[in-house]
Image (cartoon, rainbow, N blue to C red; front, top):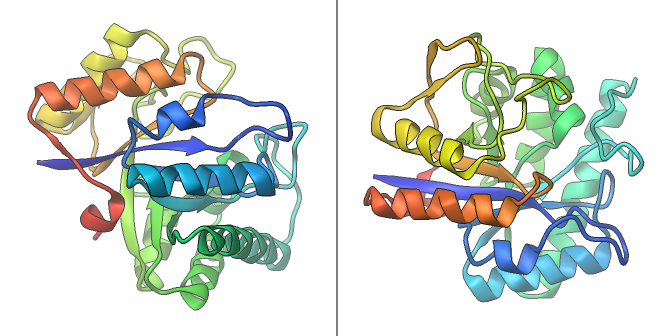
Length: 255
């Protein structure tokens, strides 16, 4: 069995940092790098690309709304044409930075409210996936399973990396418990280990109501802004290592 461990990274700005990206690079197999809109800047992007190259970690663009104050988690009334332009702009920026240091962007992972907008609107999801395909048909689109984002990627002829979110609680319908509600973010190491082991052994997760949800995924995500994120990612890695799971980047696993 092979799984990807990935994290949303580079989510600082200027002198401010959210997590230790260099240490996270030692744990993950793929990194989703903020492109300057919800977080990140040209120097943070460059350092992440360099660290990823040195560690043999695959990198992807992590586009979001242009919302530094809200960390890209606030819904914004943006029309589909502008949504697609924002995507092309951020993807192009990440590709330029990666190329300048001798690395390559291999995937795209939408951030927070920007991705939620695509999940909620199939036509928008299709338009955004078409942009990615026009830029580079070999790019992989990260998605939670059975969503408009996954369907749009397959319609556009893109490969998909389906994700299990190790540090977020699920509802029985497969959606995430909204941030701000009790238990929405999972920070207990023992609980994360238990969730990851269950996912690896039988492909399921226990939801907030106690029900079991089938989880069709090939990647495990840990958010870098979750408190103690590096330690949580290490717990994920150690759990999978103990189970004999091989860790591999999405370039080897996406379908």
